[in-house]
Image (cartoon, rainbow, N blue to C red; front, side, top):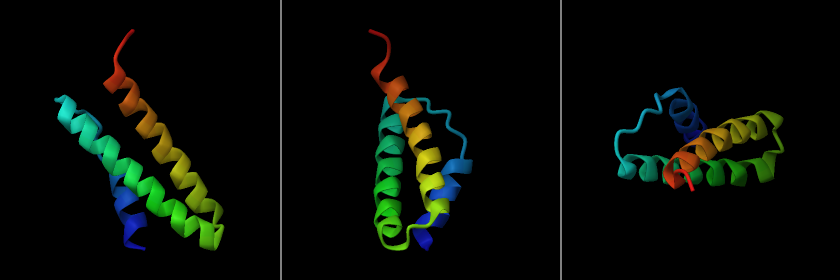
Length: 71
């Protein structure tokens, strides 16, 4: 369950990114965490894992919105 610990640590971390490359790295990291947790969720069907994935997805969406910028 090391992945869940990493996900919780990522969730608690400050999300102030100075550069675009930092945003890209964190977006990729959170995507990998979500996919890894999803593999565990497929086996266990634990609702707490689904809640964690939803919270991480919100963070990921905010990061990606900032990456895309304004039209």
